[in-house]
Image 1: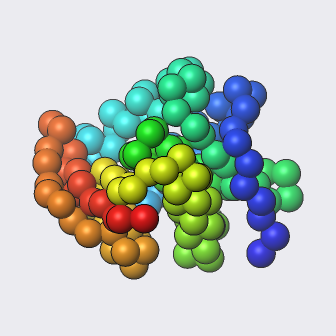
Image 2: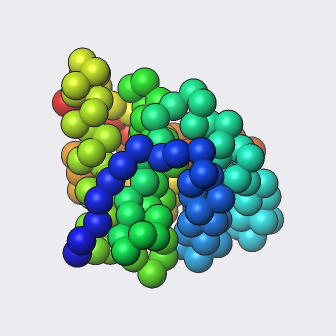
Length: 149
């Protein structure tokens, strides 16, 4: 698999938005009510993605010129880790997380936190993240996990 990870640029916002929405509709939809999934695309519009780029470090996984994954680091919190559905399960999420963890360590972060979806809980457990607690934001169940670096 020949992918590379780079910092996202403002012109990537449309592609990042599209991949997040595709992942939510195809992958996360298995674990959440349709009414909840229907509301999420607005939260991840290209405009909102571009706005988040101003306050956190956003990275993309690129293969053959296409953005196929994304993850961001917001101080000591990992956010918005998504991989295009047709590229899931082949190590792209793992590569993104290793990249984020290395950057966090360079910034002297001692503990990384990930607010995980139900869908991704097993993925983070495999990477050594431990459940701290569960919380709800409306219909959304969030599993707060953390890992010492």
